[in-house]
Figure 1: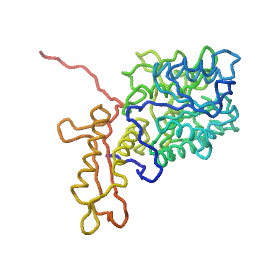
Figure 2: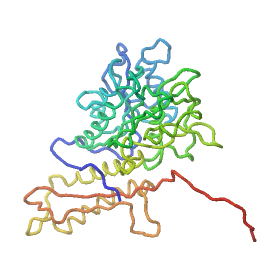
Figure 3: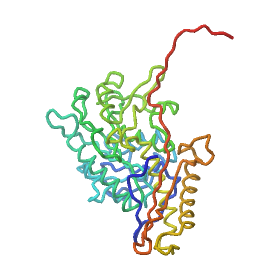
Figure 4: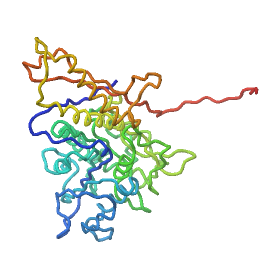
Length: 403
């Protein structure tokens, strides 16, 4: 079973835990302009539906400086549905996605702090056209945005105990340059997904496809693939790979094989579906899949909340300073019960139906750590994900059928 690639540490000043029911909470950092008396740049606002933008003075009018914000929120709620919790922060027009995500800046980092860890997925969106170097397949800011998005995600896990995943756009992409795309499957940024594609209204690109993907994330359980066919097509009418080439005519294989999140179509189904749920890391990485990332991050949050109850508590120890076995077993049982009750019982972890003891989670407290001398208790937690039918191979032929 895969183990989290982050360590749960406790120290003075740790933020409080977050309710596990907020799995679909999304935070959107987007370029725009202040609206006198209504919208302040750099201030997080919470929305529950598209109508919430009216109080911020944001409209869909052609001359509204925040029209792009309106379009992105509209696309998000078109997919997520009314009631989804969306945190929005508007930053100056000149702010790039890499600057939005940089944990040394007070943009997305501030949004995560103000939300007190409620946000699970962060979007960094810009309406500004990308600057693309000669012979490059993506805008020059994308690579830095990936690096900063990973750093932001790691900071959120280490400092807030509230891990997040990050979605950015592959701005500046052209279908003609598909083979020149940087290969994200050679990277190690397993908290960042890069979305390529354009939502269209006629011949005009509107909003952000990443906002639609975030809407799908907001409404499905953590273990579910965002491209699951049973969940139906995305709620968009028209899409292209780059603003000009329709999805059905695009080089989707090159985009998908190099680890980008993009769209596809299925014969016999109308509409657009997510091709795969890549994150920008090796295919062999346990967290290459966005669904796997969400599963382990939820388990992380639950484990943190459970173990926090023991912080600064007395620990009964043996003569050599190691934790008493009965105490260790009690800790383990609490963690397993919490994760099983909040995840396994909801179908979010895989179990063996023939094994009544399989709860989809294991927890082990280190019995050899000298707690008296180190004041530290080491705990290892492992959860069991589902497999995913990304490929189905069937053979069909004739036979003489007998009753």
